Image 1: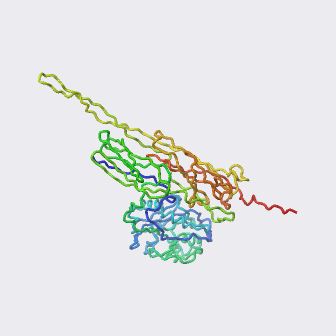
Image 2: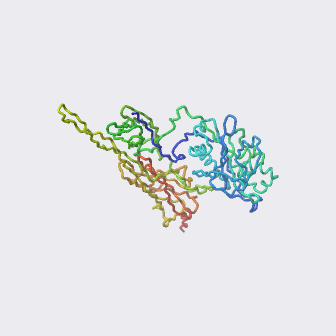
Image 3: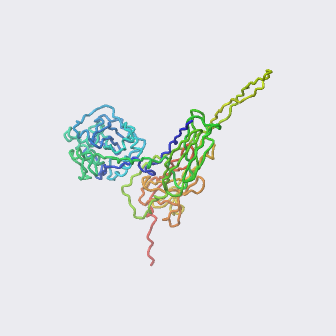
Length: 566
């Protein structure tokens, strides 16, 4: 009987950190966050806007003729349920093609994506365009756009379509909460004879339109070469501002080359699993699976399951100590049939991007605190194993001789029954940071910026099938001065489930320390650690951890000039 099988769903890791975009996306749209301040001009209490009251309008466009192929959708971190007037879901392309501005008082519809959108409209002159590009080119967001617009993801990224982005602001104008893109604001200002510009110039004609513009002309719109800090005219906004574009190159002929079923870290004990189904597998008709990994074959037997059900089969193995792409050949052999499949695996080395050495004259005047990112978290797992047992059913087979004697025999006409043994695993994890032991002026959990911290992370997995799990094997820490991205530290494994910072080559005492930047402002200094690589047949267990110290003052306050000896 033919056996069918498929790989179990692989765990999703934090894409921005570990995996290249399989969508092959890059931004044709770029921009500059306005550095000219965020005041409301001559506005009053009835004409106001608060930083962060913003969103992005998203439209899928056909590249060949610039036609919009989906109804625009608005993404926002906020819940703007107080919008009283808006202009529907209309894209800049539609307005450029002659569609008239049409206000409506209907309910304003929006989408709150699970992954927080970076700040779009600046109020302080800092440039956030790199984060905006990274966000809207991420595989997660592009898949979410495909989902909410009704586009097939593979079709969307196939090279025939582009994504048009338009920043949106939610603000009070003449006492009424409204929502506009930059283009709608310019069109509305023309309708009200310039009143919107007089009331809200810094928002509607500067910060909002300059939040995004093109580096290279596309979709019939030119690259913006005008001022990046002055209020723009309505004509310039309509023709050139308030838009960004995500475009895609065609996928390679063999897309599986860049599509990885698993991602692992170097030098890590991992578990690779497949799910087997089709027919029935029992001791009379057994199924065997072999995994060919790095030239070595791992065989798995005693894989049983009843008709109409399935069974996980897994192998535990150790990854190589260098980054590489691997393929795992899986062969399933059953009674009368054989099936094969290939798993693509990416092996990553996380110990390649530690922070640079902080120096005493470092500055970051534009620093703004970032929220702790959401990372893949899984604290428990469950799986099951079918155990067959024989149900006896004895039947007497008569065999009469010529004299009428029954010389028959008993025959077992039984069958295989199955019990389901259930297993589970759970992760407990904790982290703590403290002032570095060589910090001369630390007081409890308070220190001056410029000094270092020490860190400890612990994690333990408990399971009723301990042979089928691994303990957490990697911990990666991220820091507020790098917005919890850009640079990170791979902690050193000090024993089963315990991690500390690696020795810092910039530390005079070679301590296991991380130095806070001297420009770090007073307040909470929060470290974020992703504890990973606790593997089970049901995938990887992980935890997203944080701990904080308080910064008060800076290292320079501990310096003094000794008096000159007479």
